[in-house]
Image: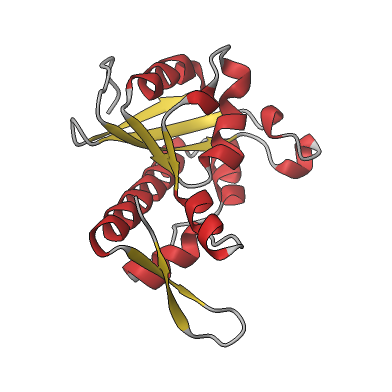
Length: 182
């Protein structure tokens, strides 16, 4: 699933890390990349990257017309920062979590949104991903990361189509709509 081609259209992507926040004292830049997966709308393909291919990943991000993800501005770009001198925050970015947070005033998890809108949850957590990396279960790790990219893409497409996403109010337990305009 790897290849050396550049994209032009929209790219969806996600990064998994080698370390946890507990191990880095909360420093995102020290988490280190275990893997990343991107999906190119142009080629309709998933591409897998390992840490030694991060430079290629970053080149692809800079060739995209738009980079779409979940918490890119608060997490993924910080994790990638030590690997490049380029300003990742200058990329044309649509961060679904940030957009929803602006609208609602609080954060929703990818898992919550996937369950409420797509009827399916994530296949694990970031801590599971670190464990799989350490156990050498790289295929499982890449599958998990790819699934997160798939969920993000589906949420983006659903929001674009209907103009809103659903979430469950924690206090009353009611399902509510949050307007989106991407």
